[in-house]
Amino acid sequence: MKKARYIRQSTAQQSNLRQLAKSHPDEILFIDTISGSIPFAERPAGKKLTEAVEAGEVNFVSIHAIDRAGRSTINVLQTLKFFFDKGVIVKIDNLGLESMINGKANPVFNLITTILSELSSLEKASLLERQKEGIAQGRLRGVYKGRLAGTNDSPEETLAKHNRVVKVIKSNTTMSLRDLAKLASDKSKGYNVSPNTVKKVKDLMLNLSMI
Image (tube, one colour):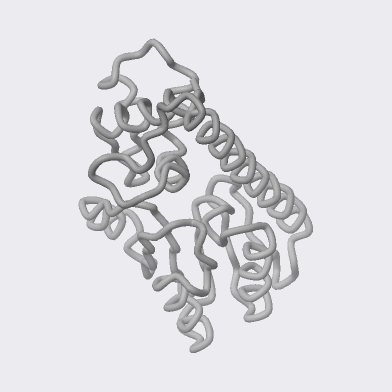
């Protein structure tokens, strides 16, 4: 079995790479540091993984969650179909499911991945819609400040990049910035945020009336 692991993260976590290599010594790592809005085959590591599959160098791919495999439901399904057509088994870690059993398509995998991919796309669309509404309201009140200081990202890109922080802040509005940063961080998956990042995200959410 020629195993690979595909990882997509929005921000660079260089300290994460050695840990991953030690945790998965029998897997070739393909790591993208790029926005999830980019189609899978257009991502640098996604393209390299595609080429490795084409060359017969990989026949088993592990992915932490289904939304890592593409920018939308259609793109995720296209990615999974490509792997299936090439005889590559795909394992979604957080579901504990593999795409094939004894060389045949796993119907449970197909059903669940399609549903979860669609839900993920709907969640992203809903978040963007709420952000647009918040920006419009902020402009009317004269409090919308555009891009955050020290970043080239738009408000939409910033909140999407730190979606985990957004969810934690919404659920814990009275918690300190330091505690929010600890709760939002998931170092086992290479995601670590600082209190300063939490403050920037929280200020932006306040400006957009999201909390």
